[in-house]
Amino acid sequence: MSHDPHHKTSQQELVYKLHDKPPFIQSLFAAIQHLLALFVAVITPPLIICQTLGIPAADTSHIISMSLFITGVASFIQMKRFGPVGTGLLSIQGTSFNFLGPIIASGLAMKDGGVTTEAMLAAIFGTALLAAPTEMILSRFLHLARRVISPLVSGIIVTLIGLTLIQLGLTSIGGGFDAMSGGTFGALDNLALAGTVLGIIILMNRSRNPYVRLSSILVAMVTGTLLAWYLGKLAPLEGTLPSMSFPIPLQYGLGFNASLFIPLVLVFLITALEGIGDTTATSEVSGEPVSGPVYMSRLKGCVLGDGINSSLASIFNTFPVSTFSQNNGVIQMTGVASRHVGFFVAGILVIMGLFPAISTLVQRIPEPVLGGATLVMFGSIAAAGVRILSRERLDRRALFIMAISFGMGLGISQRPDILQFMPELIKNVFSSGIAAGGITAILMNIIMPLNQPQADEAAGQQQAEQAG
Image (cartoon, rainbow, N blue to C red; front, side, top):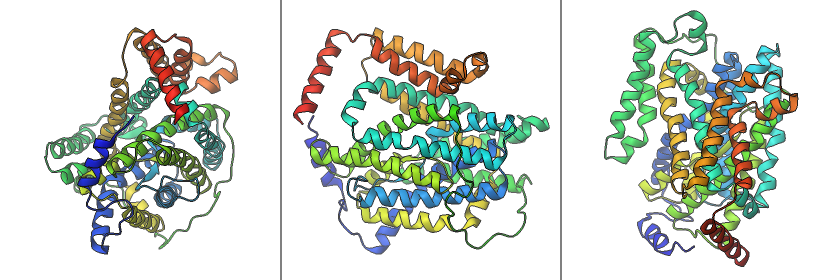
């Protein structure tokens, strides 16, 4: 599996290679490009989780701050590479969208059961901390994992993650859960705000200038928030802000939620496979090898780093992290693959996480504005899953596995009450659509026999891996 022609092309197009140190101004400019690409993606998952679960403003502000702080720390660990941990490439990490569905579903179930906000957060962070070693263990057996969780399986699960989240995006567009209870859900001013945001994103993505496309979501959300302020739909600031906020480990304590554990383990498995894809893409655009021992050690380092960084996220009161693929586009666009630039990005994110004013301002983004942007983001996740599937041979076997898996996943995400009379264990395992569809895809992939060409291809791949 040689990529030498691409490898040479990537190296020729690079202005600064992996170990180069660009001058300060150029480093800062390239770092700002990366921040433009990732800022909205980092703050959105904690913001959606906290708003949906009705978490108080002060706690929401702290959790968003910690997401920025941990994104910086996690990115530094991946880029610096400590022993076997990390890729040593310009690999940016951030709070992952993949975990939204299971966390929100179990959080709402705990709230309905009368659990306090603090106990609910303790259970979410504690369960994530227990599930994160999935990636650490998997990193040692990557070659085996890729046979069980094939691209067909991971494509199904990534598509399910996107499709099950779209409902959340639409809820925000209509004004959120508060608007549902207040009778203003789907009000025309909410739809107009979300439509404006969506329209700006579409218009900016028509541009041939990659910088314009890159900053489309950020520009659209800022414009939407200013329009909401002009229309008097922006909540006033309450109380005084602390000037700085320092990370406090285990601020909410640690708990455990059985129904959240299995879905999280499954999503961690998929996040590991996404990490493999992102690291391959980063190696490709950085002119680094995409086969051989250096490449394999980077893949293992990425997945191991993912697990360790998600554990740190739980300890510092925020949600699991994963590698960000959008930053590969920035490397390609700027021609700067230097991880020295990545250290700038990590430093700026850590500093941003220490100033609560940033997270407090973020919190005031109106729901419809957030909805307009997240509809695009969640749709993009589903589209990424479809892209993974499109690379596979979609024969009768593959289509049958997709049909059963999507049926189970989307069915249970829309009607979770179908499991109400099931034993507790079954309910815990299949409570989320992602878990139901994902487990179905894994089992079907094992049960359904490969046709002869696929069996020959799998055997050839196995021999190649053993030889490598």
